[in-house]
Length: 365
Image (tube, rainbow, N blue to C red; front, side, top):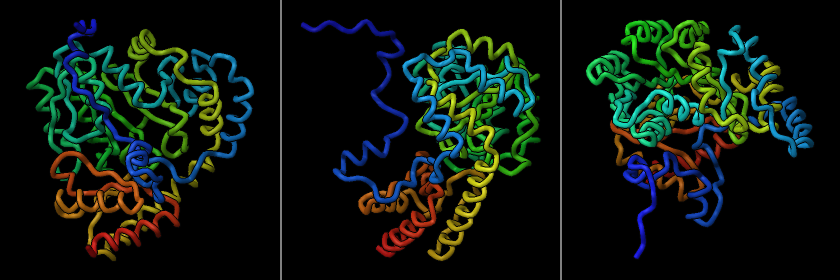
């Protein structure tokens, strides 16, 4: 007779799921690789040559543990953002940091406010620590700040999450709107402003860096414009008191030497990052042109991806499946009415040409 495992009630009650099905999983199911990989919002433009050189040199010392304080990188980030070093927490990507933030703020049963259909890894962490996601529908494909504020007050939530620019829609709110949103939150509520796509956003969407407010945590990543998604490195900017609490539970060896070296070098290579941003701007315009040619519309985007509006979830699901069958990896938002779209990462020009050809074939069917 088998005995039950000694699991926490929270974990024992969770369904067996992951927030994303990776392209590698889909490739194993299909028995072949994708020809066009434009579904995971990875950078198609590689990493900085300076980062590649630094990471190669760091491999020679990979037998050593990484610096648990991430001191050199935090020092450079403090200069880059004009904040104190103790207002920066480095983690293994924003996903890692979101888990830490939920861990220090959410008790089992606590409500947490988030847009319905927004970045699913955040809600994954909320459930994993026993919290309850209070979902607020988008308004006009953007985060409904008024609706989220109302839900915070009604539910008594101590944590609210806003991605700006947004994932999965690519839309954004101006920094002034977010500032007002944070200012009127209850005194016992912390706002996470996830700025993973900040490098691609218009100036009006990203406000001045202010870490004086103890109720705001802003997160950034090296996964997008810097092209280091596989290295897993990101950081949070917040009041020193909040960072000190994150330090209590952070995995201090969670960011390896190679990632630290690459991030430090890439941060200093502004020309490379600016070149990636320009290439993404060009690719977004190409997708908008493509959609017009195919009789479709796109959702305005300030990210490295574009949502193609197919008009209905049924049509979007059929298109996504047909694209995958033809070797094209894309994704779609998971909740209505946003699931009328397919979400396509800005690829290299040759990726975009191949995608256009195959999408045209799919739509004709």
